[in-house]
Image (cartoon, rainbow, N blue to C red; front, side, top):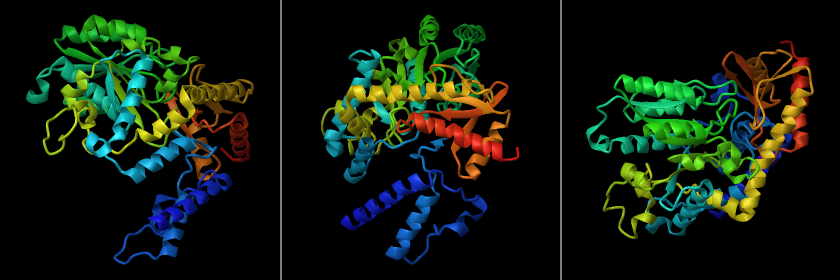
Length: 453
């Protein structure tokens, strides 16, 4: 073990140096991938030196998500104290389903969940769990909503036409999850949005009324805190009024930007969050923990037990259910994803998490100001978002982003809203500074002006 830990340290140092020298890995065409790097598995073992060199080749060719040239996804960067926690979790190798096998790690997860519930205004009946990703959190929320609407469905199956609602700009997982829980994709209504992608409560009310008149059964509404493309925040207060009128479960999908709950300056973007029935956030996005660290909490923990608890004498042999986390999770065996958030939170405190969130909004302000000051750019996004969407000199966003990637200049993606397609710059990497933000634009301009588009 110590020998491999020494090798790991060497490889980690190599990765850090690669990120500095080659912040965007040269992509390998899939047609020649297996001829370029020796990743084949054979009968004979690979000797140590060859094994190390192959690992270095893999590191060189893997996208550098922690570099200051990576703006492609809704995550990025590397915060050392959080990485430390994840490395410790790997070494400890606990599964989180029972207190007997996880011990104090269960307490760590429960502290995180309790603090988040307190921060959003849920009462002492609340609880939650940590899940593999935001899609899974949305799935769990929809399951709890289904069972809260009709508990017999768990045993008898779906017999009525249940209807779920989400905005036309929400995450695709909502529709996908509808097929998983047995209500069907066609029973998800895409609610209209305003000019910046926020769900319109008046259209939600209209669609619900239409479904009730048809004899259908509305049961679930998904609101979003940070839509995938524009980073918009749905108006929770107005949506909750509609949900209360019709007794519908309201879930707030904060996978992207739900971590604004840690910022006094930006928490107003989720005003009314205490009115929801469930809420989720991805700490591996705005808080910068390693992938993945997704959290879902619900106002009343009885729904966790109703939907996910099942007796298993071979597993739950000690301690009360409150500390046997398998009783409130969709999963049985589950890696410890709490420790990396706890090591970050413990080391920087609430003040530190607030600074992490606020810095991302500051970087977005810097980027928007640059775009607005240059007539060669067209801005498509708005304030109070960490998604900065723009086009440069009318160049196709898809073409520009693809060529920047192919030439190892920058990793940035593109998005579409209604009729417009644009570059989507995400300022989620907290390690990025103002100078890096300006460097991004200078690199893009120099490349775009030198190419024939």
